Image 1 (cartoon, helix red, strand yellow):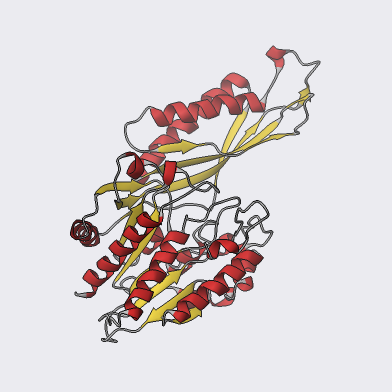
Image 2: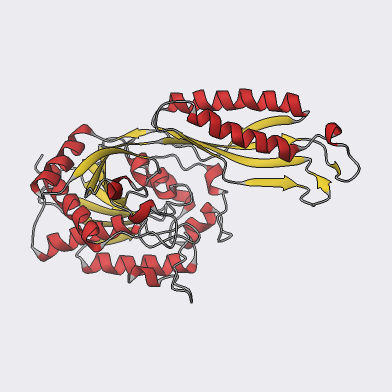
Amino acid sequence: MELAQFGIDDTGETHRVAFSDADIEGRKWMMGQMQDAGMDVHIDFAGNIIGRRTGTDSQLKPIGFGSHIDAVPNGGNYDGCVGSMGALEVMRTLEENNIKTRHPLEMIIFSNEEGGVMGSRALVGELGPDALRVVNSTGYSMGEGIQRIGGDTTRLADVIRPKGNMKAFLELHIEQGANLERDDLDIGIVEGIVGLQWWDVRIKGFANHAGTTPMNMRQDALLSAAKFILAVNEITNSMEGSQVGTVGRINALPGAPNVIPGEVVLSLEIRDLSEERIYVLYNKMVERAREIGEAMNTEFSFHPLDATAKPAFMDATIKSAIEANCKSLNLSYQYMPSGAGHDAQDMARITPTGMIFVPSKGGISHSPKEFTSAEDMANGASVLLQTILALDKD
C-alpha cells in the first residue's frame, strides 16, 4: 500500500506506467527499501534495479528472484508488486534473522515489464534496436525510457547474462486468473509460460459514400474485419487445449459515419504452450482471411510485430522444491500453466527457473479491482523463501 501511493489519483487508483514520474518515484522508494534490508543496490544499463546480498561462498553462482513494479495504464496494485514485495520480505527476513546463504542472492526489479518485458529481454540479449523505438503511453520510447530511469542504451551489451551465469531464478506472482480461488487452493506451481505472437492485420477495401453505394457493390473493410474476428474465435475454439486467440484493437478508416470503411487495422494475438500450435492456428486464420477477402472483394495482409515470446517451461527440480515446501507449510497447491507472460519467461532461457502463483480475487488483473489477500501474499512469500533456502543447499 505504500508503493501504491506513487501514482495515486483523486479516486484512489494508482497509475504507474513505466518511465512515468510515478514510476521513477516508486523506483526510488523501492531502492531505499532494498538498501534498508541490507542489500547493495544499483541500476543496471537496462534500468533493472538489482539488490545483491553476499553469500558465504563467493565462488557460487547467485540465486535470483524478483518481479516488477510498473503497471499497465489503469492497472492495479498487485500484478508484479506482490512478487517484488515478496522478494523484499525474503531479504528482510534473512537480514533480521542473521541467516547467511551459501550462494549470493540477487533481488531484481525488472524495468518496463508491462511494455514488453524490457528489462529481462535485455538480460538475455534480446532487446534490439526495433524494440528501443517502441513508444509507450507516456510518450517515451523504450530507449528514451531507459535513459530516463537511470540506464544507458549505449551499454546494453554489458548487462547480458550468459547462459549458466545464475544458479536459478524464481518469480512470485498473482495468478491473474480464477483457478486457485475457484478450487480454494493456496499456491499454483507453474509448469510453463505460454508463448505469444502478435500481428497487425490490415484489410484493404474501398472507401465510398455510405448513402449512394448499393449493399451488393461495397468493398467494406470493416465488415470483412467483423467476419475475421468471428473466425478467430471459432478457429481458436475448434482445437482442444489451453490456446487463446484475441483481437483486442481495431481501427477503421476513414472513421466517418457516412463513409464505408476503406481500410481496417486490427491486432491479432495467439498464445499457447506450444509454438507449433500457435502457427497451426495462425495458418488456419490466414486461410480463412483469404476466403473472406475473396467473398468480400477485400484484401488481407498480416504483419508480425516485435512482441514475440517463446513458450518457456519451468525447471523440474525447482517445481519439485516448490511442491515439497507447499507440503511442509501445509499449503494446498496445483500445477498449472501461465497464460500471461512474465520476466521469468526470458530468464528461463539462461537459468533454471520456477514460478509461484497466489490467488487473484475473482480472477481479475490489469484492473484497479485486482486484489490478493495479505494471507495469500504471505503464503507465497513463505514458499519463495523456503524454496530459495532449499536451492541454496546444492
